[in-house]
Image (cartoon, rainbow, N blue to C red):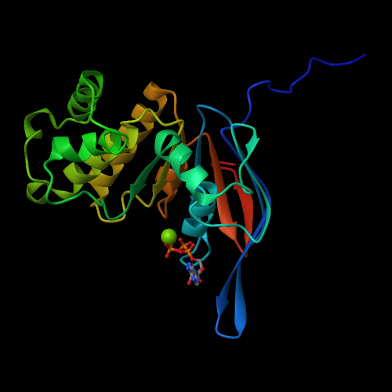
Length: 238
Ligand SMILES: Nc1ncnc2c1ncn2[C@@H]1O[C@H](COP(=O)(O)OP(=O)(O)OP(=O)(O)O)[C@@H](O)[C@H]1O
Ligand SMILES: [Mg+2]
């Protein structure tokens, strides 16, 4: 008897197969990734922990097509992308992947509202529905009174909430967050992660969260550790 099929018809948002990545270091090479297999279903959240220098940021850069692989395969929504040109990938990336970094990277010469709208503006003049979307997101992250604020007047927690709004602006399928609480105190960091997970779920996006914080890592659907070039699944609470 054939059992009920468990094969999903919806392709994974991201899939990597046997990714190998090295960097030159003088006459030597640094082997950063040594055959990384990873798959994330739509709407799911994953965390990646690992020592400094283990290759977490490199892996996010590869997943988003910012960095080329030495060998292996990368798929976005079931389509192989590792052989495509960087220009072709850039266009898709800007509409499908949102980024949040430890160092917020908001533009100081623009106010908060303009920073969030910028993602849409890069693709042309913002339409009314895009202005509405930026306004909705800023309200949703609790910055309703700060629309016209200079980003330099915001606290670290407020800047990171603004960065979350910006990352979600184009309704990306995937959010990549690289140590988003690295510059925040514990309480602010905890609430940032709660808000991030809440909004990612609300928007139906997938998330890869790179973090050193075990408590935060345990909150995602699946967890991994990057160690000696390999991604190992981690179980929380046994
Ligand atoms: N462009 C590059 N050229 C040469 N070496 C690089 C480059 N980018 C990263 N590396 C090296 O690859 C390794 C992995 O770096 P990566 O930034 O991915 O680590 P990480 O896990 O994100 O560390 P951290 O937790 O400190 O952010 C490090 O040894 C780093 O020096
Ligand atoms: Mg890093």
